[in-house]
Structures are given as C-alpha cells and as structure tokens.
Image (cartoon, rainbow, N blue to C red; front, side, top):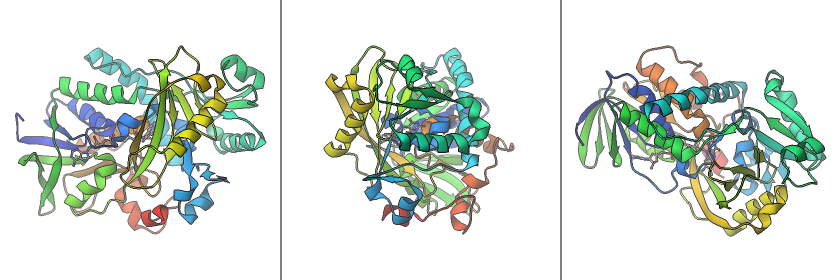
Amino acid sequence: MKNNKFDIVIVGGGVVGASVAYELSKDSSLSIALIDIKKPGNATQASAGGLWAIGESVGLGCGVIFFKTLSKKRQENHGVIGEVARPHQLPPFFFDFCLKSNDMFPGLYKELIELGACDFKLEKTGLKFIMYDQDDLKYAQGIYNSIPHLKDQMAWLNQEELIIDEPFINKKAIGALEFLKDDQVNPYLLMNSFRDGARINGAEIIKGEVTDVEVINGKVQSVTVNDGKIYCNTVVNAAGAWAKEIGNMVGLSLPIEPVKGQVLLSEKLPPIMRSCISTSDCYIAQKDNGEVLIGSTTENIGYETSGSLSHLRSLAAGAVKALPLLRNIDCKRTWAGLRPGTPDEVPILGPVDGIEGYLNACGHFRTGILTSAITARIISDLVNDNEPIIDLKPFLLDRFSKKVVNHSVEKMEDILT
Ligand SMILES: Cc1cc2nc3c(=O)[nH]c(=O)nc-3n(C[C@H](O)[C@H](O)[C@H](O)COP(=O)(O)OP(=O)(O)OC[C@H]3O[C@@H](n4cnc5c(N)ncnc54)[C@H](O)[C@@H]3O)c2cc1C
C-alpha cells in the first residue's frame, strides 16, 4: 500500500464498487482507493451480464423463483405455477433508473476502450420472452399493456417471425415479445474494465478485507484493512451481499441479505441465438465467446453457494425445451452467486442521516450489472455536491423506517420465512 490517506475509500470491488471508483477517478483532484477481497459467491463473477432494462424491471431477469423459499406475502404477489413463482414488476421509478443506466453503456464502452481499459463486450442482442401457450401470451400482454410509454422498445413476433429470427427455437413456441434495447455484456470483463479505467486514472486498488470503519463524532475517519488504518473523508459501502457487515461497523442496520442464483454454462458453440432468451423456466444468453449461459434460480437460503442437482436439472430442462439442440451439448461448468437482496428489490443508495462521509452503494439484487453505470453517476454527483441525476428518495435507506412508500415494503424476516 503506497498511501494510508485517501479522499475516498470504496469497500467492495465488484462491478458496483469498480464502477464507482472509475467514475470518481475522472476527477484527478480526488485520491481514491478501492478495497476488495474476493468472497465466495461474489455476484459479479456469477452474473449473466444482461443489460435487461425492461426485462429486469418486469422481473424476467430472475429466471426462476423457488416458490417454497418465499414468504406467504410474497407468494401472493407472484403468479404461482407449481413449485415456482412468476416474478413481479417493479415500480415506475425503477424502470427509469434501469433505462437511464442502460443508455449510458454505449458511451461508457467508447470511453473505456479509448482510455485503454479492457473490452467488456457490449453486444446489441435484445431479449426475447418466448411464449409456449396462452398463459405465457396473457403474461406477456400484461407486461406490454402495463408500460405503454415503452412500446417503441418492444416488438411482437408471431411463430413464423420467431422461427426466422431464431431458427433453433422450439418449433412449438407460439411467438415472442422482444425487448429491443435489452442487450448484454460480459460481466466479469465489465468489472475489470471499470477497474482498469480507475487504475489508469490514478486510483489505487488494494487487496484486503475491511474489518472496521471508524466514526468519531458522527464523521467517518478511517477504515481498517490488513491490520492497518487507512484515513479517508468518505467511505462508500459497495460490499454486495456483505454490505450489512460494513453497515454494522458504522452502527447501521442494512436490510441486505444474500439471494442465491445458480447457473449452468455450456461448451463453446457456433452462434445459435440472435437474442438473449427468457422463458417461464429459465433465461439463456450466448456469450461473446460462444458459451451458452443458462440461469438462474432465486433462493433465499443464506451464504450458501453449492450447486443443487434438482435445480440445475430444471434449468437445463427449461433450456433444452427452448432450444432443443442443447440436449446433446456438454455442460462445461456450473456455479452459484449471491445477489445482494433488499426487501423491496431496489438498491440502497446515498447518504444516511447522522453519519457524515458515509455513502451506500449496495443492494443491487438482480440488476447490479445493468445499474452499475447510473449508481456510479449518482455517487459521483453526491461526492461533488451536485443534484443527483434521479430523485434519490426511493433509494435512500430511511425508506425502510417509514410505514408507507411508493410500493409494498416487507420486512426481510417476512421474506425469508
Ligand atoms: C446468477 C446471477 C445472475 C445475475 N444476472 C444478472 C444480469 O444478467 N444482469 C444484471 O444486471 N445483474 C445480474 N445479477 C446481479 C448482479 O450480479 C449483482 O447485482 C451485482 O453483481 C452486484 O454487484 P456488487 O459489486 O454490489 O456485489 P459483488 O459483485 O458481490 O461485489 C462485492 C465485493 O465486495 C467484497 N467484499 C465484501 N465484504 C468486503 C470487505 N469487508 N472488505 C473488502 N471487500 C469486501 C466481496 O468479496 C465482493 O468482491 C446476477 C446475479 C446472479 C447471482
């Protein structure tokens, strides 16, 4: 470690922390440290890399929610099919948050490549929700009709059009609803690209675990890492599913819990899909190197990252149903990651009353790849005393201490029971 004093220390070097470090590093007058230790279940490395702004907002990025792990109240919010539940839609401010972030990616891509950072493989693929029956059609119509202002970003494909567009799709599919701007990146490379950009701009990246944050008279003073102190004016909590631990260090109770997602990856294949695909069984994305990623489960079972055969089998079955040629393809790898979940599925961003120099950038649940860009802009606006680019109220931690917010907020215990 070259220095033990920085203007800003970011705790957690996943996609969110790395994005924040990069954005802040554009101001050369700020000294920045990004501190990270890789914990098993790091969400960014586990992710599918979907920039599914509409898909995520309507819930398709969940893949499959295992109904039995949800509370009674949440079961009522979801359309239940057998053992799994259909995801529910998030409020309008969340669409806006996701869409704005998605719009930032082409600019970020150009900027990072020009700076000499690694290529994070931004691919204009779109996302198709595949319909097999009238229930799926009804569900897709519900989505389409609920967001009339976004109709220009959606397209209906009948069976014939779908087969022309996706020749390997199950011929029994009756059509698709396509989200035209819901693209994809390589999530691991996105994180590395942000890190590269931050490093090139002069930020320091420190390997180590933050074990304490010192606050004196309501003001952040330092963090403890690798048994040494690093002094700072501002600390940003970007510790993903472990953000609660950092919150505890400054006396906060953050309602963030790990939400496990399992994924399968195929061997490399020639191009078999034009778009990413979502069905009521799973989602499927062919990545830039030809591997086909099949996700994902949504399980509230703590810090647990093992693979379970029954869940992986059901994802594989869903993928083979959508793309029958996958039946004879080798599975190269499976893994599980921990999404940083919040009770209302909305991130926790910004300052908290009574702790000067502390900022939240956590709780990104299933959209942290997509919303890393706007999160970084918001944190940069706050650090520079600018008006944030969106209304921060629904993202602030204090929404959980109020009885009524824009949409239903449940206690974490309710969700986990
Ligand atoms: C299976 C799966 C699929 C997904 N698919 C998508 C998708 O298609 N699109 C999308 O937008 N999102 C997706 N997500 C969600 C997305 O991956 C997360 O929202 C995002 O990665 C969260 O990023 P993060 O930086 O907050 O957390 P992480 O990536 O988990 O990073 C947090 C980092 O902080 C470190 N850390 C924790 N505590 C400390 C400490 N005390 N000191 C130092 N370091 C610490 C951790 O080890 C970790 O490296 C998916 C998630 C999963 C699991």
